[in-house]
Length: 192
Image (spheres, rainbow, N blue to C red):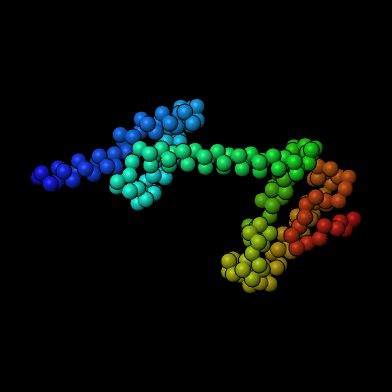
């Protein structure tokens, strides 16, 4: 009984993380200057400490070890935010200063979606596997359990139906130029 009590007391005093939470929270608050961010930082530091618990030396100072981990997590987070901000700035520099109205694109996308959904199920499935999922003709035929010739026929009929939608008057947002819809495996040339 005495030996068990000594082992338990020495084990809890050596790695008493709950006793260090106050110091960790205070240090996190001084780093972040925000209570919510400080709690998140303490949580992340505790997760990392748990992952690295094998690197803690029994003769080491637990408080110093935990505060060091907390500091490193804070620095890592700050570096990650700076890198993300830099990526956002670079993306903003590369983007076009003037963007076309989103409504036109959304209207067009909605028209294409409606036309795609109006296709018969077997044509829709074939076109989806080849055009959206990027499967080869043989892979798509295997997935559908049909011969390659049947797949090719369904694709041709689906493409023809979508081209007909593209060529119909009033179906495009801007009827001034060439069609915007690119039919995979088909042609963008209008047969007018």
